[in-house]
Image (cartoon, rainbow, N blue to C red; front, top):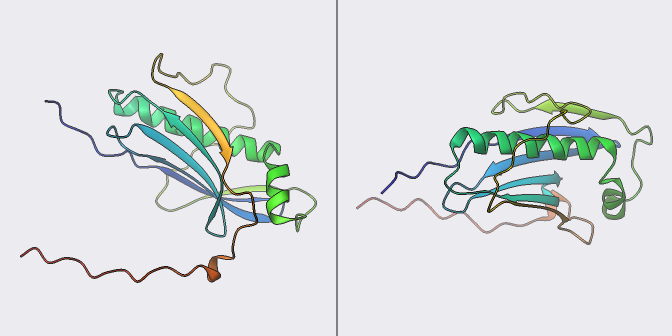
Length: 160
């Protein structure tokens, strides 16, 4: 029996696009589920998600490369305006018509340079068991984060 690895640490970026603040997050579900998700957030709501299914036997470095490639791809899509129509449908007209794009990393995240154009060679994808899809996940405007009520968090269970 082979040892199962933990999920690989993901990537997070704060982005200002069209005057709105977004958060882009990429995470690995681990080999037990073998999915990589990248979410585009605004005010705590997921506006869109990209999912990559990979071979659970993939080496950790290969999965990390897939995560970086997907994270960069979503950042480039956002910068190029690929999601502008969906964003405007959900959020209305942008507060900043100039369409500026700014990126900052979080402290828990190593800086991943986001090139304006993809590299000359595409990132490798496994030959089998790999699929990639991008889909909007909200069809109505997101609720303001402050209006979302969450259930209380139960106390930790004792180890007795």
